[in-house]
Image (cartoon, rainbow, N blue to C red; front, side, top):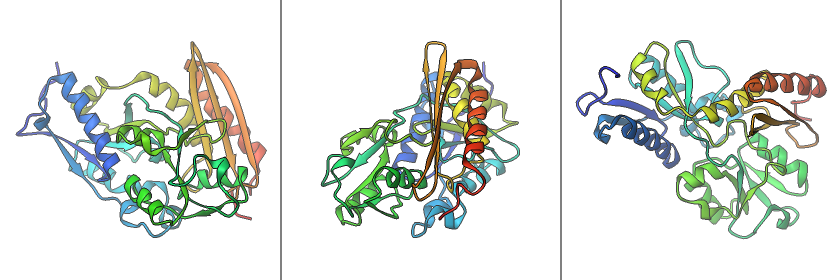
Amino acid sequence: MIANLPTPAQPLRIGTRGSPLALAQAHETRDRLSAVFDLEQEAFEIVVIKTTGDKVQDRPLKEIGGKGLFTKEIEEALTSGAIDIAVHSMKDMPSAQPPGLTLDTYLPREDARDAFVSLKYQSLAELPEGTRVGSSSLRRRAQLLHRFPHLEVVEFRGNVQTRLRKLSEEVASATFLAMAGLNRLDMAHVARSAIAPEDMLPAVAQGAIGIERREDDSRAAEMLAAIHDHGTATLLAAERAFLAGLDGSCETPIGGLAEITGDTLHLRGEVLRPDGSEVISDARSGPVEDGAEIGRAMAAFLLTQAGRDFFSWR
């Protein structure tokens, strides 16, 4: 039995970004904990923290510091004790955590695929030459330009609602979103189609929610263990080992996806030149328990194939 379970008078404080999707993920975490421990929702407090990545919308992430800008302020609040746990989209998480923090709880993974979204067209293949496609993701930009070099890519940041508004304002004629986010917002109908991983390999850990805590918080550790999804953890062990081996960040176009069939883990990965002119990919399989080693081995192989200047702009 866990001592000192949260109460309405002393709630468990859940830190999150403030977008509708981030709040949906925080509410899912709260609801799972509430159900497992038979606690009323008032025993939890959702604490919204605005991150630098949310505040600065007019520049690409690589110009203002990278992927960690979606987590820095939240992790500072966690370290200081202002919140008890932090809920993150795992595709936004750097491969290492700050000292004193640990990320060892994952909720069941949603659909990992990218979604094609347009108010005019049904699929990527329909887009005429010169069509503007909006994306702030270097991975998606590189993948799109590799397959469809006749298209134009424009910067396109913001939450789901902001991106849909930009489409209606014709800033671009199409964009990409994560199917997982649309599903969690009950907005799957927004997608014209889900893009097969064979056509667009998703970001590492896309579709997974991670929950971060302080290493020395035994109560949080015990509570989170009760909602941890081991299957998702197995997939992410392989994918994040692959990402870490490449020293991946939002400045590096990387795709990766692990899947399990029986006792076998299958991992696909790729690195791209930022302009889409070249892709180097690999696929490996092995025992489920060797997932992290498979990821590290794939990263090492792709690094030898890519060469030192592979990720620089031409």
